Amino acid sequence: MPAMTVVEVSVHLNTIPLDCIIPTAKTRLSFLPNPHPVAPKPEVTTDKHLDTPALCPPLICLRAEEIMNIVERYGSHERTTAAGEWLGRSSFTPCVQTHVAANRAIPMVLPAFPMKSNNRMDKVLGPLPDLGDELGLARLVNLCRDIKAIYPPGAVVVIVTDGICYNDLTGISDEEVWEYGNRLRKIAVEKGYACIRFHRIMNMLGLYPNAQISKSDYVQLCDASRFELHRRCGRPGFDVDQFLKNDEDYLRTYNGYDKFMKADLKFSPVTKDCTGPSQFKKRIKRIAKSMIIRGVVGQFECHLTAT
Image 1 (cartoon, rainbow, N blue to C red):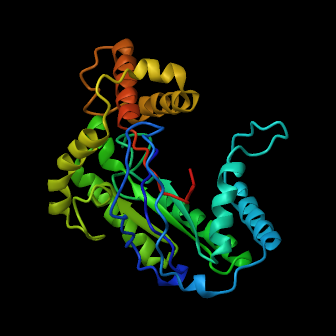
Image 2: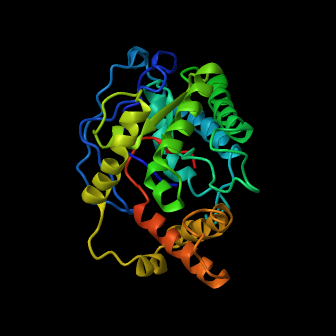
């Protein structure tokens, strides 16, 4: 699920406190792609790496290419260039070059780990993180370690846990979303995953200032967070069907939602009143379109999107 915003991740890999990424004063969010342009702001950082001599441009380019090769190996990527090159390489390489030139850790953002599936019959065993989640975190850590092996400042991954953007659509309680996210953070701490950071929607919106939050405070802020997302970023009169006809990327996202929700919501309370397969399919498509409308696309400036 896409989710991005402006976050400063410019300090050294080993000095960022876990779960302590704080958004900049002006945060730009959008429920849809291509938000209105905002004048770029100069980056302000106190990274001690900036005091080190800059590498010469050829070495910067070479090191950035090596880093991009590692990132490419960790995913399945669309190849649409004439030479069959990964489509994201041309977009992300200048960003990586900027951080390499400043000798900074490479920041990446991943909108993921929202909650467990609501299908507790044939998909998951319960609402808490399981081995699959642990393996997912470990893979991200391996990505950061592989980058650090060739580039000492290393890399960090900011996981934006966006469960409350969608959980009410799928019949999962706010309490379950907090329990899942809280346990996931504990796993990262217990395993010493210092290159993994977490960020919540209420932090992005400025509704809660701290990285740690109690279950009661979290639950009290969930409705307000969803309301604020819609108030600040919704587009009145938005035609989701027309939008999907004109945006191939989001059409693929919608088709993915439609496919996975059919399995996730098979035993969900939001579909239990469906009288037959036809009504069930219509309900799933309606939920998938609602998820597209709520899709959060902000900007983590100068971050790689590790989806």
